[in-house]
Amino acid sequence: LEAAGLAAFRSAEVTDAVEAARIEFLGLKQGRIKAAQERLKAVEPSDRKAYGQRFNAAKKALEAAWEAAKARVDRPSDAASGIDVTLPGSPRPRLGHRHPLTQTADELIDLFGRLGFGVARGPEVEDVFHNFEALNIPPAHPARDPADNFYLSDGALLRSQTSTIQIRVMERQPPPVRIVAIGRVYRPDEVDPTHSFMFHQIEGLMVDRGITMAHLKSTLRLFAEGYLGRDVKIRFRPSFFPFTEPSVEVDMLWHGGDRWVEMGGAGMVDPNVLRAVGYDPDEVTGFAFGLGVERLCMRKHGIDDIRQFTLNDVRFLSQF
Ligand code: PHE
Image (tube, rainbow, N blue to C red; front, side, top):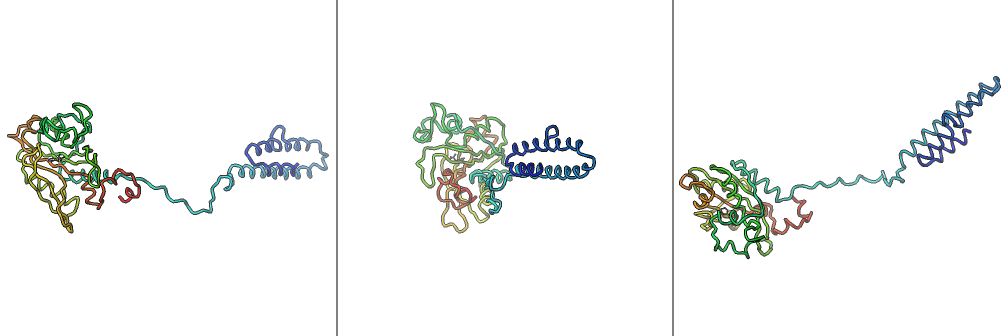
């Protein structure tokens, strides 16, 4: 009996087989150990002690064999589970991180936040009023040319500049205003290393009593030093935008750089724009500026092709 039981437990390879052996040998009702125990009663008193010892030993051995068999089938062998515990540990899973442009946007928002600018966002599908009319861009203006915009219908287009957000903010609240608007803009440009049909702008707007060009320049200089380093210089060149007067192009020059790089446009908010949102140009004045987020990021990190941002090449992205 003991030998048969041990063999049964040893050869059991799955849980069901172990259980079947348990029922056959150790089952409390019909098990063979139980039957052997019953037979003890019929044994001659003189033999009973020897029989009892033999019985106890067999029962213990079978119970131990059952425990061992359970442990064996519960924990599959390394080979059966396909895990080779002798191999070196696998590399840690690689974690993703924020896209370089998102990192740049967060950094810009943080920098302007320290200068007291809140953040505003707005819709990417805009109407002609917010993208043009309120910004002093009349119907015949070349900036409204269908070849230079992504029109979706007669009155709707993908916004071509984040200046639309200035209008939405000023419509909602009375002066003073101090915000940066950040987001995607769309223009049907030929794609090349420095142009794309979609890019990001960060646009600042400050309106209050007595705001002047000096506030604009010091804000941009503080920002440029904060983002690109203390040794950056900025320069204004006269320019024209329908929504600012006077208007300037903003150039920056880095320590070690050999030429001024254009970073965006700026100017004093045109009185017509202030009127379009119900502000009184005799009471308040304001400045606005718009900078390209890609350009700032490329300049800071030495990226030479704007297309890298949308290729999703991990070799590029993982460097940031
Ligand atoms: N919106 C202008 C552009 O896209 C930039 C700009 C913003 C210029 C604010 C002046 C003031 O080119």
